[in-house]
Length: 295
Ligand SMILES: Nc1ncnc2c1ncn2[C@@H]1O[C@H](COP(=O)(O)OP(=O)(O)O)[C@@H](O)[C@H]1O
Ligand SMILES: Cc1ncc(COP(=O)(O)OP(=O)(O)O)c(N)n1
Image (cartoon, rainbow, N blue to C red; front, side, top):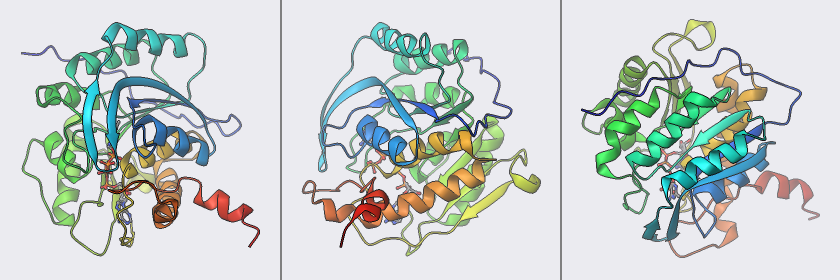
């Protein structure tokens, strides 16, 4: 049996209003700029943070799919992580694609030594294109890593894997599964409705310990589904926006509310970019560009 990773304690109050959040993305790459580290850095900047990045895997992919993945030696990953944390005070970390269990364990080990005040884990497993971004044998390791996070942001299929259950399709069942994951791992869950077959795309914060405002265990965020194929990297962009916004927010609810508004506008303007022939990217700076548009 795999040894259990001992989890670092969850943060108490990570709020620091005066400091520009210094946010580290630990993730894979997307050379077309729509997902992974490239999307994270845009999202962090668009939400008012200073972005940094440690690469877990180099991914030859575009808006249509993944061609191949190159994984640098795990010692080099630790070298990158230590290079950042030996020098920079990190306010928040967003963890995305981790590829295999050796990488997951190296990140867990670094978190035990250098835990930033905010840790958001997007448990990336499979891309929209259907290509695997996490080794199937690494699922146990990712489940253990969830215990290190303050917030985990699974999509519906990833939520089912964390719950060790079949994928559900009704929003009520998604909420129940998120509750189970929150109880099992002692973590706040952001359940995302992007994969629902519905005209709505809601999200919900679920914390079984009732640590949301007013002691609530569920807070829902309504959202209309935008008719678009520009949804590549939405999960990456949302999780890094949350890592950026949390240090300046009184709680996760405010951070999610702000991030979802920003994401919805960015999705709505994605098609204007005309990038690629498949699932195109979102327009991370649509709000900023609109403010500077002379017309
Ligand atoms: N077509 C859409 N219109 C509006 N919001 C969407 C749409 N697709 C996804 N979202 C939102 O994007 C975020 C990421 O959702 P999801 O697709 O479930 O995750 P992932 O990208 O990890 O698969 C969520 O906030 C979800 O509600
Ligand atoms: C390097 C890398 N990381 C993550 C993803 C998946 O991105 P995500 O935002 O979760 O979802 P889709 O883009 O698949 O909708 C990726 N493609 N590459």
